[in-house]
Length: 448
Image (cartoon, rainbow, N blue to C red; front, side, top):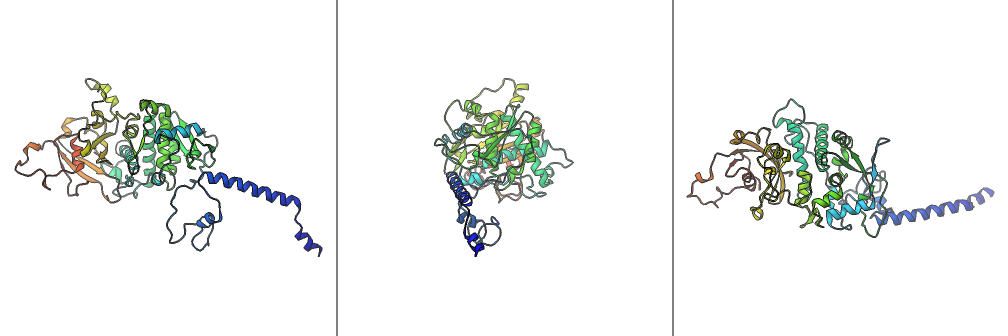
């Protein structure tokens, strides 16, 4: 009898402890609700499977579509070695990022951008070097990094393989090494050859709720790691490469944040001539502006950097002209932009690799001979390769360029609008560099 009474009697201290825990739980519920999360039975059960069996978070319900915001969840906790120097993002920095990217501090990245990461094709395949790029606004960033990956694999990495074998005969680890080199190159250029900042996501939230800023449960967890040596930045990126190439990593946004902080938000604003023009624009989806492309290719977010005739070229070429030419170039063609010429130093980079904007879609054109743009005799008949980032492309397109075939020698009796006379947009982009050149696709159906 006494034992039963004891079981029914709960000490007052225990009741107070339970009440305190419930109060704390309600506080956290309000906090998570502000960041767009939920901690309810419904959310808990959603990660268990349709029948509710299995451990929590074992997977999505069988036969049901994924939730509408697939990447609103927190990425995996970042494990850093003790003593790693870094600083957390502040509210001022988070607001500065948003205003540079969107023009205000309340706009959020779309699901397409949140899902985007640096995803390679299968190792040891015809496209082992290649990143997958969905149709959308992130494609420009992915293809810009693709150009630097190709640069590393073809002209930097030590290997006994030659030509396209250097791109195809690579392992998954070598894919990560190439991505780390490409990201480090781009960040280092933005930091004017003196600094690189790498942004990673950590578990703690560093930015508290504010009426002047809309949280996304991602930016508020950013930790900034600054490096004064490029090799150290590249090694750090490789050590944390899954933060950029892992599914659910927000890898493209992380790189974009790293790029802006490497340049510094103040310098980016100066590059934009102090205007309030955002780096991303809305045209059905979120896409990159010319200033954003310029930052990716030249390290400066100048909207005029890509256009020809806007900036005087160094007279006489020589060392100064060589210094201003970057390793990766840029070609652009679109029927509505046919008159807008790309500046000469981007049409003629140091290495035969170009990011291409063709009718608004981004791709990469490249050659395997580093001498192509340094010896005019090499430019008579030569080979280039083309990759557009789409899953439908299963093999690198091989193009043969002949600059000695003159368009005025073509049969004038043929209708230039006939199917046999029409040129693909890729060929038209190539002609912005080599006027009048003929392009053979070597059996591949022309792109675009």
